[in-house]
Image (cartoon, rainbow, N blue to C red):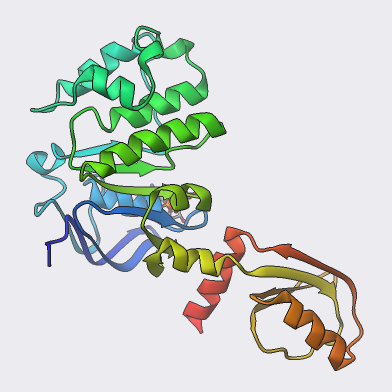
Length: 293
Ligand SMILES: Nc1ncnc2c1ncn2[C@@H]1O[C@H](COP(=O)(O)OP(=O)(O)OP(=O)(O)O)[C@@H](O)[C@H]1O
């Protein structure tokens, strides 16, 4: 079996009392494109920061390209786009690409990089004059300027419209098709589905699911049934039940039709029944509760 290009072993990282990453182990093989999915505060950014050497683990080990991510030699093989970037406003896009590329021994050709991310028309524009979405596309393209082996993208398409997002995906895919390894975080299942083969779901600092995009898709085929039902009977096939203060009950289930049939057959009194598709957040809750159980 090929050695992993990223190897995380029993890693824990705390900030004061907050355990941001809690005993995580994760291997990523060369050429994989992996999506990290998880709700706000799950620990995704911290995991990336540990992998790129910006943070040190409190315990456990992190290996990148067979070395320590804090070594300069290792870092020359990677490209990173953080969640938030502040690009120099007075610089032109082409100047910034050249500046970043100059830090690497064998950088990507500037024209190829611009073409890959459909940025040719912006090359001589000043960064400060670009829209937020255009700046974000530049920030993502910069991760590829050093001709890296591995790229880390933290929420790459935040703030982008559908067209810009697709252009970005094309550039990321082209890198992956040439054998590049990518680890990206996203709140958009659609994005992970469009790009990744593998998804690791992170919640409260732990990897609670790790599988194919199809597996995770299966998790979000859940339906959210809300109703008022003072005495909800026990019905098989329910992933999660929540009651709120206003007397509403929410049920997550893979088979809403079956749930409703059983509810009616039980004779329980209910009102205000409503069925919707579950959100990704719901899916996280459902797998988290299974994980805890
Ligand atoms: N520098 C810091 N100091 C204190 N707490 C931090 C710091 N960075 C992160 N945390 C906390 O660690 C936990 C994990 O945060 P992290 O940013 O890794 O999550 P995330 O999954 O990337 O979230 P989001 O999707 O909102 O970006 C959160 O509870 C966060 O408040």
